[in-house]
Image (cartoon, rainbow over all chains, first blue to last red; front, top):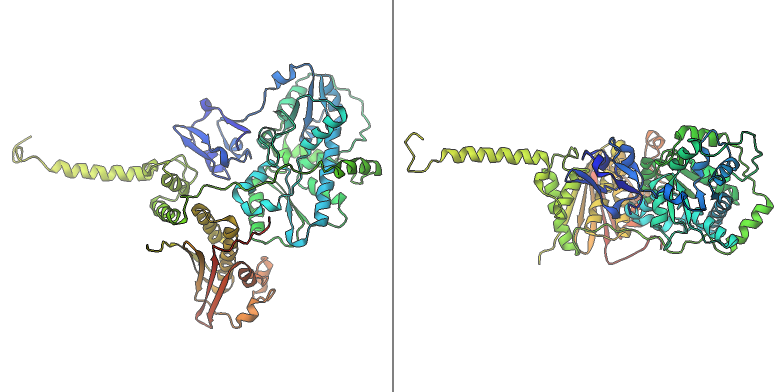
Length: 436
Length: 149
């Protein structure tokens, strides 16, 4: 639902790079500028990656406005903590943010991630084998991709709320505070998590600001960094969710049996895996963890650091996968309260059929195929559509014409010029035989 | 009123493992466009995928014809391959005559025909040794089996 990206019209060259990169074919170039079909956009950020003119940006909230308030409460995506070599651990970052009057509620986040992993492990324990594998709900772009492209898989999406929502809910309950919350996000999809969440009416957070924005501000020499090595000691299991496989490892840590999981990242891998699942080819697998960004959330377009360096930091982290009895007790209380449950069922987004009744839809599909067969099938994008098929569909839906295709336009012009030449041969009787 | 039938034909090359799945993807997108419920679309894509696999692995290619009318959907696969010697045996889960080379590619698990049977309302197979095989799978639109609520 395109809440996470915006087009900077002045920079848009009207080229076809973004429309061809979109996995749901949600983009068109109309009148020289790209436009997004909101219902089809999954906020994956592929268009941003592929725009050579920097015309597509994350539609984040203004940090300058937010931070000008007296106190700010922020919850940070785990990627935030692996962006900076200078701030090597969570405590340093917390201190740095505190010096800006920003309260970082990451303690609650680490608890919430434990709760989510624990809840999913319990569901996997109790689910009957024919209903497995279940699919992650962590990546909002994956949920939307499933809703739009894999409607039959929505029933397999694990009905567990986002750990960010849970963390804020717990923080509000424990502290009794009602401040606005800013979520630091690594991607456009998590902006949409705040503005237009799936599976709940409203988000518990109010604003979304990119990780990159704050990392740059921190590195620009805002607060003082203490150079002494601090004892870490904090739970850092949740940070692993920002790299492929981290979520599965966390769930496995809570599971009573060895889980068979598949973890993939990147849009293409995600699409391939979901396709295989739709064809019923993933029997014997318990859980599917997919992220649309390469290497996981650290590959999101809203990060500041190289995803490779972030990954290296995560790989070299000492992680304590053993959950202590105290931790277990704390999370189990919240689990019993059902805090992990999604408010609303996740449903499929139906694409509009070509017509409301089957009979006329079939006739229009035949017409669509006829139009398609006349197009050049090279998917050049010059018509402003991602493919010849998409142009054929737009024409059928009354949103385009055959001459939008430059090849068809040339053909038409050449036919026309032949006709003009023919017509020119026909002189009026009064002029025939005379010099004109 | 004449019955309106939408027809789509797909040519499959034998041994072409790189493009396997195209027939099923194309069919899925067509069915979505005419507004067929996703539960049926999914069953149809599974059938199309499995017949496509069979044409690629066993038959040296063939054609897949999909016909949609207002009350049912039919998938026809016709080939001029070696034929199936014992259809009942071939229908059993896990039975496969696929070569080791094909199994190494991760195909040929012997689930194809039983998968088709599970997803079709009617499945007819005619095979003549040395002449070829035709598979006809029908899904009726009245029935509405939900895969998982």
